[in-house]
Amino acid sequence: MKVLVTGGGGFLGGAIVRMLRERGDEVRSFSRGVYPALASLGVEQASGMLEDADAVATAVKGCDLVFHVAAKAGIWGRYHDFYQANVAGTKHVIAACLKNGTGKLVYTSSPSVVFDGSDVEGGNESLPYPDSYEAYYPATKALAEQMVLAANSPELAVTALRPHLIWGPGDNHLVPRIIAKGRAGKLRRIGTRPNMVDTVYVDNAARAHLQAADMLSPGGSVAGNCYFISNNEPLPLWDMVNRILDAASVPPVTRSIPPKLAFAIGCICEGLWSCLRLSGEPPMTRFVAHELASAHWFDISAARRDFGYTPEISIDEGLRRLRQSLQAHPA
Image 1 (tube, helix red, strand yellow):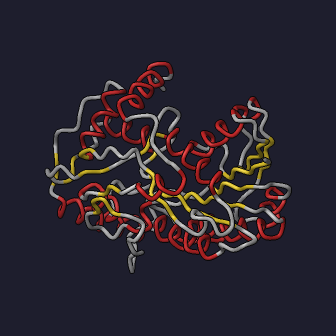
Image 2 (image 1 turned 180 degrees about the horizontal axis):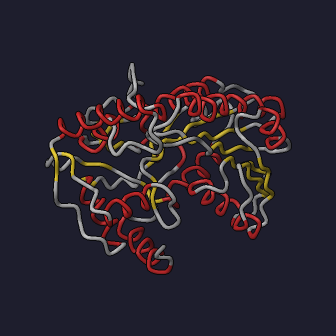
């Protein structure tokens, strides 16, 4: 097949591209920049912005399958920026697929689209979208996911995957933030209870995308559905954080602050950053305070049933690979 991966130069997108090339698919990447690593894999690269409908349509042209991975992530920023990338950009991808006769679309969503600030323990795909969100990222990802699922039709088979906290070698978001804050002594446990959280190693998340795409067809069991994706190994959140820190030879997090205090600090920080138009991300937000103080792990049996997803790389093996990568590339 000829496959388009939006965000093919990113962490998850790059892993999907690599697996597609390993099995012989012809791949095109659509990203903001040009990446030598993709060129070395023989990947065609198209540069552009998701907000540019014409650029998206050109990138989709001639492709049989689209993995829409690119998005604006983060805990802070202007709603307009999140909306344009995550909602308008997804609308352009759907329109381009329909215009070009592309038959299959796999959308990378997020479990945060159903997070309402309370514990989720073994939640499945029946969880509802909350009435409101404490951050623009989950709010716009939820709008985009609903748009994708509503577009499912005989002309375009779609599915949405919700990988939870992706990590591994080459991570440019979660792991480096944890390590940087750990080295600076800026990490604090939120509360003292062992709230269980699941994560997913990057290769497992990428493989789930390919498996879902392979089983995706109009009217099939995968079409029109969303799926949680994880390693299926829930751990206490701060145990997982400390294991990542240990892979980088950084001391564990031991000090904590009460959840109510963290939430109050988040409210104050959001107010200051909004009123004073401060640059960068606040050190705490309401969304982060609730996420770090709550349990959130999910039932992946639907993904196992419908397209055979089983995580092949365990957390122990993933951490071993992460340690090796950090030792080889300490920066």
